[in-house]
Image 1 (cartoon, rainbow, N blue to C red):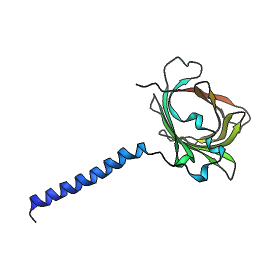
Image 2 (cartoon, rainbow, N blue to C red):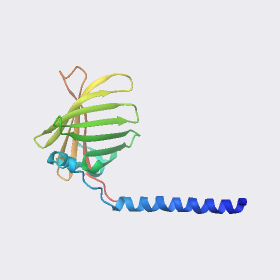
Image 3 (cartoon, rainbow, N blue to C red):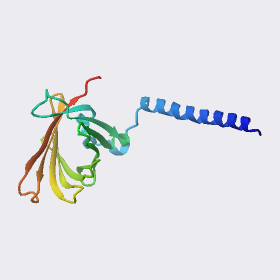
Image 4 (cartoon, rainbow, N blue to C red):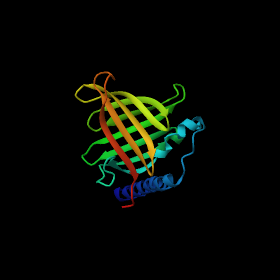
Length: 184
């Protein structure tokens, strides 16, 4: 087989493979992810109020500038929630929240592009999800953090407190309001 013919067959093969990938990419978003029968309990839907595309504001300045964008999606057939948080100053946080039916509690595992890792656990109380646990920072320090999420009007409020003394005292860490992102 001459070189020209071999290149022609290679081009056809690559074009065919490319079309298959494009067809799958186009079809995938349109197809609904089937719900897992293993995650059908009501507890798995408790945090669905947070699913969406959000602009994030300081709670005391909801009319001020957005400080971040957060995209929150149901994943794994409804068995978990994924958050991608992109702050305007370059901080990126990525987390998975999931309900553990054995321990009967929620868990969040959060990691940032600045080297922080956090694993917190807890439950819904009075309509709000309250999780607490250790945050390990890049400098090697560990602090306790308690974070609360609650539906608030058209948005979601998330606030946190920190303890550097094992939970004896707590100081505010952040308080933000997620509002549905307007079409750009």
